Image 1 (tube, rainbow, N blue to C red):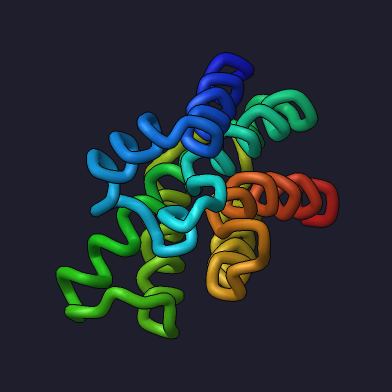
Image 2: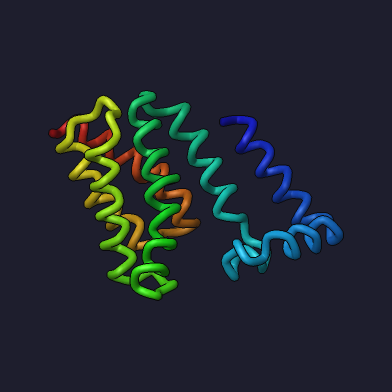
Length: 157
């Protein structure tokens, strides 16, 4: 985790301070970048790797494992399903429901050592968190916020 977070920060520094690197980076990855990322903000991948590292260091492994699955699988497939099924490319109520349904499917399929009630409750709360899109980036909160929600739920359910 440290290596991924460190490597992504090195790439970001090169992108910020090297015009030649920035030009190649934007040319290669432009279709995958959000407008704010093209403008110089950290990429969602960098925020995700930083949050992976924090969650890996702070939370028990089963919470890291499950939160990472939600962040990678569910957050990754939601825009694809939303675009394919509903021909939409924005975060709205449709995105929220697709995220929630995908999280529920993962909750039933993946044996993470967490109770089904924690996973189902977490699916609702993480979908709300994803919908609200807090700064600095939704990818950061998909992992860190998801892990925090799951951790709290394991102590109250």
